[in-house]
Length: 236
Image (cartoon, rainbow, N blue to C red; front, side, top):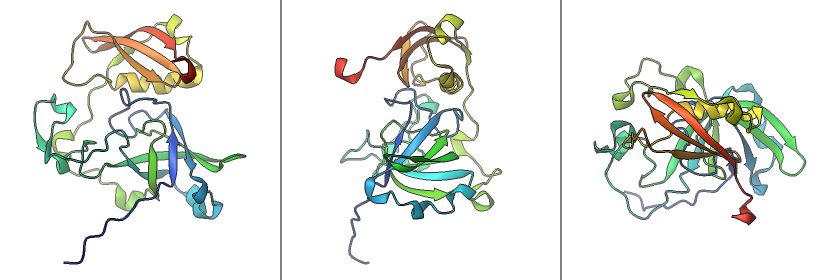
């Protein structure tokens, strides 16, 4: 065998999303298609030539780092949340963030390309499941003739999780700018709670954009019970 090679991955960009923390991020890309994010390239890679032709694709693959889950050790088995957190499966049979290499893969829709006066060409995408500031290692076009396999077996995740009905009182919804409404409701409908914490009386809080949205869940209905605007970081 050839000698072991430890390549250094280069961060080419970072994503700026409305998810300031891990809790509440959709468990897969595309589940909240109205969430909008911006991909800003690192200075070294702000070359318009590197994006020539990208406007011809509707979807892109993002290869990125689970930057909040980097660790020195790994386990051959993990406990997928959708199985209640009690069943162990092989790490390579899941999309768990706890992997030997903390690499993530997401498919996002390319909405448009903006020319920012400070950052150059910026990709505006929807449906990303990445925390704000997540480093991106590579971007590749999604090819529908080879990347889509609608008849493929899906293992333990062969069906999407059931979504919740979201009850968002109008007086609370008005506290949040309208541009965030659709994406936020989609995020809440995916049930941000851990699968092993189905406590109907517990109040949870999820941060989305500049807002802390508090909610509880009972009998398949998520009810928003409070909204607070987050304080600026220098005041926390």
